[in-house]
Length: 519
Image 1 (cartoon, rainbow, N blue to C red):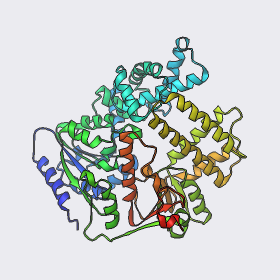
Image 2: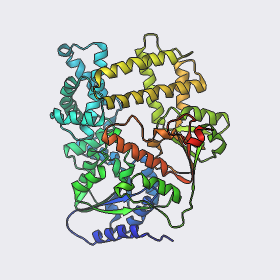
Image 3: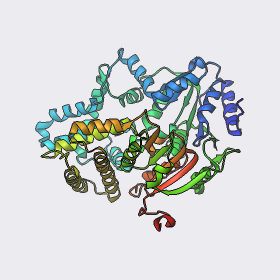
Image 4: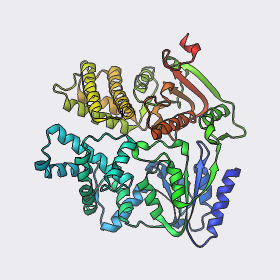
């Protein structure tokens, strides 16, 4: 039988109070720590809602929405924000638009072509400007920044460390691009447009008396705006998230999203601080990261002490069991380990089909830009040559040393990931390489998962291995928001295990414990 904690009781009492209130909007932020039973809490809270047909649960993705729908009380709906935004677009334009992932790129190419007589761009400059128009379009949409305010856009570009060499040329396109997106909304949109169009144009979606929104620490300004538009004047909203699990700065979410929600809505705040997942020692270690900020996380009263152990990365194979999770801040170290597990007849894959798809796009770009393509018999020379060329290009276009270092580190990780994949299977053609990547990166069908920390949020396992612990936080992160996000990633990694947590070091890795380094 469900026995609510003191924190859950506070949430339920707040909702009961709102159910009896008749006027004015109210908002509640639930600061939910990792493994704190937030889904169970919200499902139980949903039972208190009288008019469930007029309540909506906003899930972070379609998979979670589908799972939640089976647990919610009859009559209440679980949905993604994008799905509700699409319905608002359809209601406004009167039909279902085609969803095209390359739509913004096509619009950027059209604009450059129309203005080529004035711009006089070379082939390489053409590609760069198109890329930068696409980047600025996304920035302006997701941060709700007016493209006519160049100073404000530049501030966002610098804040998120986005590489834009031809800013004045690219920003000139954005007002026209955005207007075309609005004008053509009945025919074609892309994924971001599902949220941006209703949020920016005031295209009212169906409104609800009660909204429960999850993972709000990773909502960007555009998403927050649409959530507020979904709420009726006399309704209430429960925003659930954890400041210390904000990881989506790359999607233009603010690391301060929860505090911005509180400021925008004048929300009350209550904690959900008992971790039901992790052993006591893991909770203590994770909470110590932010103890100076007063962050609270407590283990359940009957939690085991748990295991925390330092090992060589080469010894993972001796400890790993079906159902385990292997984490790393970056992708490259996961690939050879995955192949090693496969050779030992262990079903293993790297989490993230979209990561694989992005790598394939990246390889195709390299192949296209190299005069003689990639030599698949021995790709190291051609890939490192291309990498050095890109490093020099970045040095010319990025003046901020911290931003440059992070961009170069990201590029190096992608190159090393490709070479690790090649070393594992040694494909001899581009087609073979693509098939290898598609088989390696997945979202289902493995007994042991290897994952970046970004992809591991929401995952848990009896045993968790952290590979290359020295990468947490990433030493190349220098901007304030990026550093804070890096510490958040370490926090997420430390709170995935239900029993044992292993730090898997290379013998010569910086920070490796002395007893291992000397062994």
